[in-house]
Length: 375
Image (cartoon, rainbow, N blue to C red; front, top):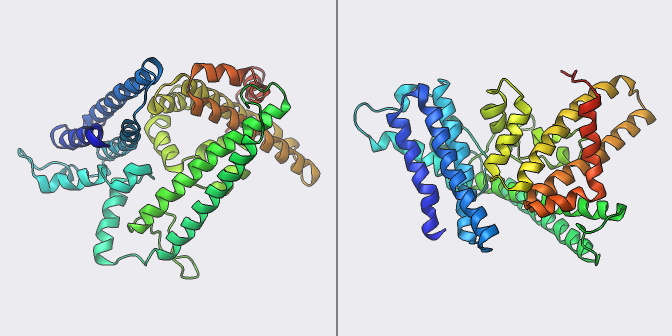
């Protein structure tokens, strides 16, 4: 990151000082506002450099990406302290600063593999893993690391095949105005998803190699190394519910958003959660549109499945129901992912002019004509 490492180091040290000086009742408010303010300022700088100056710096992008993951850990830690999950005595050292007492928090915030790509774990989980390694070390993770390396290679192979297939079409998927364009856009969104899956599995195996993520033994005595995981690829690619996709996509981040926003917000918690996610991701026009569209389709998805469930029996009817809702889920998610990833306002316009925009629009109409009555 070069000099941009200060983008991460400054808020990390500042957060540790807040833990020492601010009372537990007000810690989360201070930590949240300072961290999100710092992160938003860098996101706005990135937008200025991208849209106005037409330039980018990979080191700054890497630093801001790590800053976003740091925000998760800072707010998770501050919530633990405010909610009493960490005792006040564990976070304060009297009227003076004791470096030894603050070092565990700094270590947690700057834990290297997590700053590369997650997944998020609580401070208590982090410290228990570190202490466990000194008392009863987990089994050698060589097998699970090797297996996940093979999975990463397989995902990269799928990405290569998708890239070849997409490049074999001379027309731009974003410019296509027919059903073939819908398939091309879905293929590009699948390529984005495979990139995320590969990234998450790579981050997971890096944590496993460092000794984190051990979840005990199964009934046959084999070690379980999935205690820290963001990528449930099977569920994400087979679910026929947009709501389940939203809960499973980037699992630890979804859990963090639920705890930070959804459970705290009394009015329109679903909308507030996705709006905050757009803020956390950087507030690009495509991100704002994509996350708000995602929120609307999740709400519509609840209503659709609530009203269709009594009419779904077994056999052919159930298979048809799951098949159609799976296709709908895939195309709605494809539309949301494309707008979020392409980010610009011009990309949003092109997506809206494509046939694929009809699928989220169909669900948005459900919000108008179907009353909200789901559990």
